[in-house]
Amino acid sequence: MKYGLKHRIIGAVILLSLAVIFLPIILDGGQRPALPQTTSAIPAQPPKPEIKVKIPEPIPTPAPIVKTPEREQWQAGLTENNTLAAWTLQAATFKDEANALSLRDRLRKVGLKSYVRNRQTFYVVYVGPVADPQKAEQLKARLKKELGISALMMSYDPMVDVRDKKVITQ
Image (cartoon, rainbow, N blue to C red; front, side, top):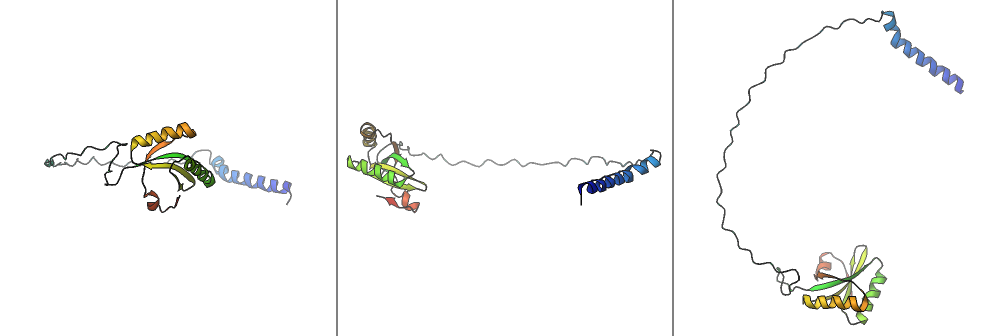
C-alpha cells in the first residue's frame, strides 16, 4: 500500500473511535445518571490482647577462663599449632613466570634462598624462610640496600601450596 492510502485509513479509524467515545456523551446532553451512594458500617476496634512476658531466670556464669598470653606477631618460637614459627620476605609479584624466575635466579646468585609460588594469575617471589625475626629484618635491609627491593615480612607457611593443591616452583 502507498503511504497516502495508509494515512487515510488510520485517520478514519481514529475519527471513528472518537465518535464512538464522545457521541453518546453529546447526545445525552452531557448529564450522567447519578450513582447511588452506599455506606458501610466500620466495626469497632477489637480489644487488645494481654501479653504476658515471663521474666527469664538468670543463668549462673562459669568462672572466667584465664587466657594464656598471646605471642607477638614477630616473636620466634612455636606457633599455637606447635609448629615452628618462621618468616619469609615477599620480594616481588609478577604476572609473567619468566620474570619471576629471573628475579629468583638473581637473588640466588647473591647468596639468598628464594623461591616462587604460583598464585592463580600471578607469580610471587619470596626470600627465606628464616626462623628469627631479627634475621628477617636484616635480610629485608640487605634486599633494600643491595638490590633496591622493598620486601614485605610475612609469616611462613610451608603447607600453603599443599592445601591449595598448587605446585611450588623451586
